[in-house]
Image (cartoon, rainbow, N blue to C red; front, side, top):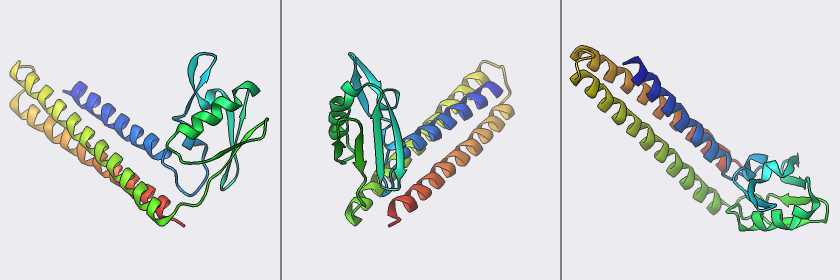
Length: 184
């Protein structure tokens, strides 16, 4: 039974971690190197994360500077950023790429909040699915005679507590991200 609980908690933590990663990729009004985490460039025939092909720095609140380790990648990085969903315009000066992060319009902020809410809801659904899987596993163990009915009931209660804890954590992450997005 402990194995089922530990496995469920581990999977729930991973869901929260994935939500945090998704939120890092959402553009707020501020510049952040995390915005470019999901961008991949063609690096000598390999699809490589941008962070492994260049140095990404944030010298100012609304400016990102990307300095590739190989100057031949400048055009490739520029194309990858333009194709991304970030809707930013990279400026290539032949040495580095500068990206000005424009302030978000009210309409765009509301759209981003909707995206964040959707991502948080998907995370909550994933957590509830983990609860269902864990409860089914407990029932199997109980039917095989390895644990009593009372132990199965106690395990289900523990899993519900974990579920409540991680669903609440997802809600808190969403609240924080929403404030960050709506901040002018």
